[in-house]
Length: 441
Ligand code: URA
Image 1: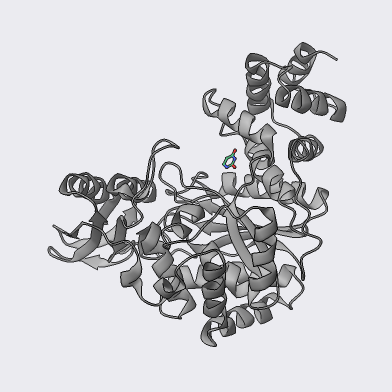
Image 2: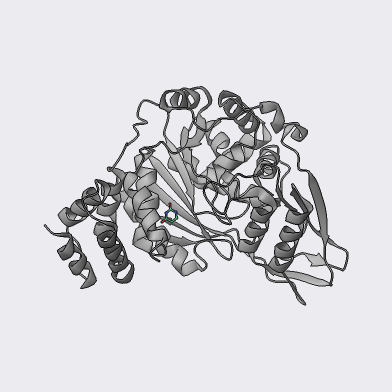
């Protein structure tokens, strides 16, 4: 077999055989296939696409390129949730303790933020003392004790994706549904859960800007998960506005705690309930409406919050933070940003809200940049709210006046003030499962 022929087959629009896909993945990971041939194949896939059998096979070959976690010795049904990335998305910190408090196990490997989107590991690390590098033995111990744990990806999980993602990043081949779907699903499958819930974000703050492309990605990922023998569901959720009111690391942990205490904004609370309910439903805890009720009860009776306290303490963190927010790292400076005209917040460029938070110090532009756990934004107004000159739009937190200036400039540009109130938008647009697409809007 020759890599030259594999590239030519895909260039000419042919489906690759399982053997050709295996040859490529193995050869690229062990260094026999050079970057220039791998990038030519990625571009051919970008332009020609792949059928469901090819994408599923590529995913499984990538998943098998490194460690495959075995969670079968953990109690209960094991579930995982993946979000395609957004602004203000702190849902993992809420739904892991909710489902754990119902006896469903979530042994989760999360990522760091890059660019305008935040990452769960950075959020968790804003809790003093908390470690996200537990080692596989301690990771499982924490999961057994608490029903959930959240750690960073182990070193040798899907090396094929590490190499391919870096290559795609510099060869204009990131935005391809088969390549994104295989990249995401290879990591989920290698992490070992029985059920996978995908939260595919759609809108100005998301990777997928419109519903059609979000649906295409969701259907591709559900098809891969089901072919791999994992129960898989995808929800398409709105990311045309930030989720909740807090953007930033410590700030998002505080808002996650507020959700678990029943006192957070309606949007973030409802999104967390729906995600948790879908996980509970997949794990056999009842019908979707019954699971929504169950998730609400675990918040109301305090069990989910207690579960988060246990998990944080078991990972070495100061659990007292979760009730006394003054124990989190504190920002050096803050600034209130006020509206200058009257009207309605007609829309928000959510990606720019994420960029403003990054400029305040909450994110990183390069993987090695340090982040400021205390930096970020507390929004006072979002899309649909009425504003007058002097209405508080947001409060910014950072380490210097210069950063506040940069953050304020970008955040102001993210608000579009209109003469009329925009129509309300549902939190979820569609649910994709093995039985097909159910439109929710
Ligand atoms: N996230 C991933 O993990 N992979 C992609 O290709 C895109 C987003």
